[in-house]
Image 1 (cartoon, rainbow, N blue to C red):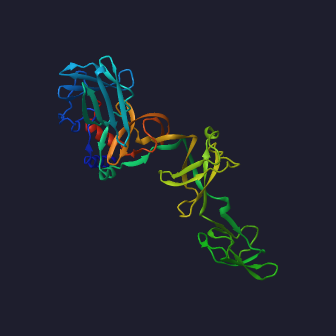
Image 2: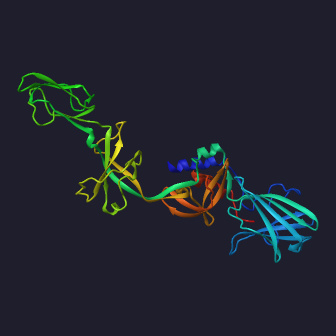
Image 3: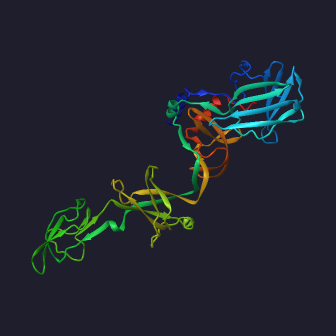
Length: 412
């Protein structure tokens, strides 16, 4: 079934329009149309030509942070870098703009600053040489694809916003449903005597003030009524007509809406699991039930299992919980709130990086991350994505597959 869903999702994403990598086809330049494939220069970079003047743009990142290096030529011969004034402007998805000045360094012009990942942007290069101004514009996308809203929905892609989160270790607890101690009421006759009549059976629902029985007092021989003092379900009826009442309760009424879960706490967890902690309660098949807070440890423990016991109140207004049902809980311990995190399932491998895919309308683009602490739900981000950036929290593997299908590269 999973393979069917995966195939359907891939088919839906076939509607996406992939964009190529850093060495992709450029957009039309100010000085005429570029070739279908960007021409390479002698140093392996993108060659930009205007008449007999040309510049070759490279990104050098061997043993250092990525840096632009630009080589100028005229008529195929090197031009003194000191005779060229050069600036470069990068426009990224999301509106970020980076501007680089250049200084002569040996045989090339060196960009003053680090070219941050991803190397995906629209580029404008302005060079002034021999009194002439030359301008080129081209697109250099990397790790980017376009997916329509309909295809994203069909593929199960869900968007979240990068921001603060609480990260910790998740400890799993196991317990059973029980009635709260306050949910049990015992109804007795006011005076000892013979039961004349009873009106309710085990399992009947009664409301407070309803007639439950009539008893003939042994002393006065007068018949008096017994009324329900609470609303709830009859759990026990300990008398029939003709019986004589004694110390035992005539009726036991319970309120099934007042339930709790008694969790077993293993010795290894006693030091970290404390009363008041939040617990996510779910059925054994993983279906969410409720969120609550751990109560205090009970005086008695579970001698057979060798565990301590803690009670957690769980509302049961819908009546789905029954005493004795097995449930499990998840508690986050050693928790710390970090200023920036993403969903752990959103993280994908891309080249030598761990990435998520930032979302801008129908466009998705890699964000290379430096990661910190992690849990099954959240992973701390130290750098690589800005707070408030929308990203694909679910379905990111489909986006990665679409980008890889497009043959995205890291050429410059």
